[in-house]
Image (tube, rainbow, N blue to C red):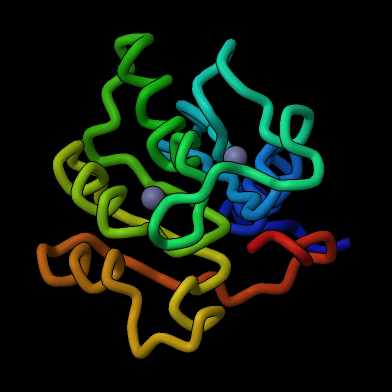
Length: 160
Ligand SMILES: [Zn+2]
Ligand SMILES: [Zn+2]
């Protein structure tokens, strides 16, 4: 067996975390690392102790926002950042692995928190047939290194 790169290990973990999401529509996972060590993880969903979308609305699905996403969920990237901050772990200079390209709201937070590198697995814009990912554009414009993950992971279907 070949020796896996950290990018592969952490993206695979992000994909596995996405599968834990209770949201019905979208499953997104995120891993925050610093100096190749994990400092936080997250997946999309309403705040702990509030709602489990799949159990509460098994048929109707999550209450949707104007873009069709879950209106109750905190995004995976924000959950990962919030957990780190809550536990007084600095995310300055960190790398973020996420299974879906960050939305603009997450991009603003990622930038503000000093995260320096973002690797995403699937492009939201590509999935939707939109010209570009506005979150990615924002990050690139303001100097954050953003890459689309080049590898292929076996269990990464049905995440978006
Ligand atoms: Zn939901
Ligand atoms: Zn977001």
